[in-house]
Figure 1: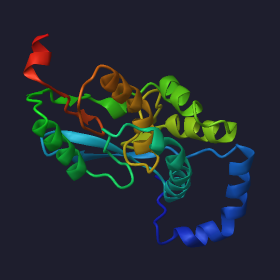
Figure 2: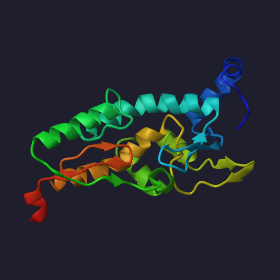
Figure 3: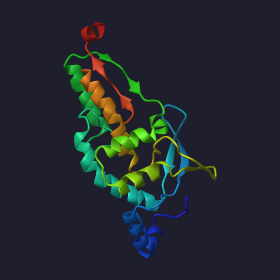
Figure 4: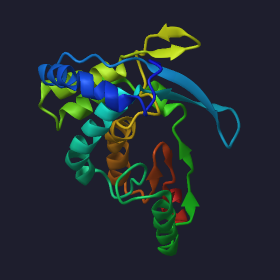
Length: 208
């Protein structure tokens, strides 16, 4: 939304990085709103993306690289979306192995508008379970509430996680991990990729 290109960013960072760094350490950095872009979906309709500024992408990526080693080891083995060393193909292989074990009843679960409806308080509570640095928590909260520019108009973001930023997939998995753990507690065998999930059960178990 600030019109800065990746090519122009190094010169900007060279001149301003010291003050940016100081504001991050002081906990006063204020992210810019994201720019709304609609991209077509294969199933029809469009998917809203929130495109951060180059500077915010850099900071989000740094935060994601710092937080991933903290969160990822505790995520479910049935979660495959946007995790290091995991892919959609791995999710397919997991489902294939479940089928080989005799599970035949499948439920295709898609959390409608998940990214658009995440409750910020719930998300921040999940993050605070593992992150104690209040500056990091404050920065994440500001990213969530930074707003979105739609057709030149700034709109508040009181709920949701904007798709398009490097930090969003990790935050989404932090919320959905509770779902994974509940499915595991109930004895379901499943594979989840982002907000799509395919739990399976044997026919006899389903009838019970």
